[in-house]
Amino acid sequence: MTDVMILAAGLGTRMKSRRAKVLHEIAGLPLVAHVLRAALRLTPEAIFTIVGHQAEEVERAVRDEAAYLVERGAAPTDLQFVLQAEQRGTGHAVMAAREQLKGRKGPLVLLAGDGPMIKAETLRRFAETHEAEGNAATVLTVEMDDPTGYGRILRDAQGRFARIVEQKDGSPEELAVREVCVSIYCFEVAALLAALDHLKTDNAQGEYYVTDVPAILLEQGRRVGVFCHDNPEEVPGINTRVELAALDARLRAAKLRELMLSGVTIVDPASTYIHLDVEIGQDTIIHPQVIIEGASRVGANCTVHSWTRLRNVTVEDGVTIRNSTVIEDTVLRAQATVGPFARLRMHAEVGEKAIIGNFVEVKKSKIGKGTKAQHLTYLGDATLGDDVNIGAGTITCNYDGVRKHETVIEDGVRIGSDTMLVAPVRVGRGSKTGAGAVVTKDVPPDSLAVGVPAVIKKKLQ
Ligand code: UD1
Ligand code: CA
Image 1 (cartoon, rainbow, N blue to C red):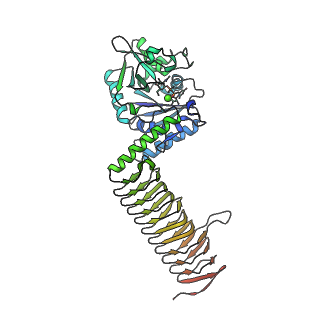
Image 2 (spheres, protein in one colour):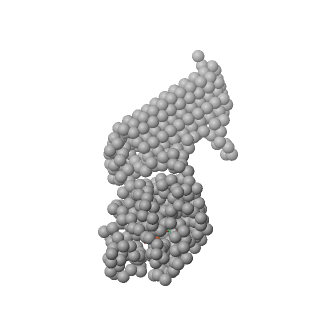
Image 3 (cartoon, rainbow, N blue to C red):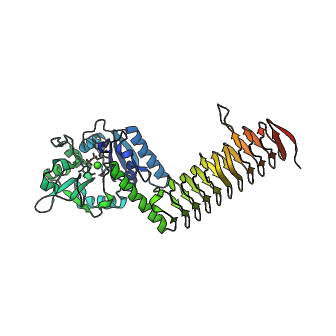
């Protein structure tokens, strides 16, 4: 079985950031998470991630992504993290994992954490070629129009692989070569371990280069292969924020195209931001300047109006989300209407055909079927039944300064404008509150609560 190693210890000096480069995001995912996705699809026995800069954060990003993918059906793997305390080059990073590599049987696919575009299918063909050719090392290469910055592949007079020369070490003739190394290799582990002992730092950067390993293996009489891939789009390494933004734009355009071809209307692709894993049903219309992030799912026949942001939201069919609405970790049931200017968060659930209107905040609350809160309301830690009407200015006073308390509003209740519901409190089925009521005690069914604090006056009916 194959093992994978991801090099992710570097800071990424050219990013001019305090954040480790592999934690910077494209399409809503850290670079290293993109690499992990491709790696996991090889169903490797183990994935070794070399960490250094912000080791804990990088480890968390990898673990979180793996857990998320396993939850969505990926085969689990043995995740191992190796600390490279000081970053003295890509070869040095591999050396840090010597102990872990000893005794591993399968071939090792080595990837850089800053190469997010590689496809699992390419890696699979690459690893198969390595095995089929019986190589000690195989180097994935690509021809680039502008190879600046990449290690160049030097070949002998017969066109066979000779060695890799880094940008900073190459002569002008060597740097004229357009075939480059993209930091994707496959190694026989025993051969790799033997070669590591021979790495030197006599180069322009004074570093241990993993790019020297193939030439060392050749010297030792081992077989080294080259897998020349035909798609340069899959292999750029990210070194600057300019490259980061360019790749992000590319992934974004591809995602929008896929959605449009599957029957989603994207009114203005140039201003629409939709993350990789978002699913959207047929005939849904996404207006300009909408952002949909995380593991969101939007059903069919929905309309999402401008300046809206959804993150980890499940939207059933036929829902309308009006302008300038921000929704996180929430479920909107079929044909609900939300917004404009609404904010829903922390496991809110809006029932079928319910209406949440302008300047309404819903936090960790369940809103029943057909229930309406149309204006200027805060519903926190509340459970609302079906066909409830919430008057303008109503607030669930859910926090007593120490603890959060729950409000329950049963089916068919009419809450008058500007009612304060001082939780914990329950308003029984069919009851009403008068405008400006401050409800501090439970209201039995079919009652009217009025006043400050509300006195329960009489039974309705
Ligand atoms: C490397 C290759 C170069 C190749 C390019 C492709 C070397 C010497 N050069 O250069 O031939 O064309 O990638 O993108 O390998 N890292 C560590 N520890 C370290 C140094 C780096 O874990 O001590 C990690 C980084 O976090 C990064 C990856 O290795 O994810 C590549 O490092 P980077 O410095 O970006 O290498 P390049 O200069 O781009
Ligand atoms: Ca790089």
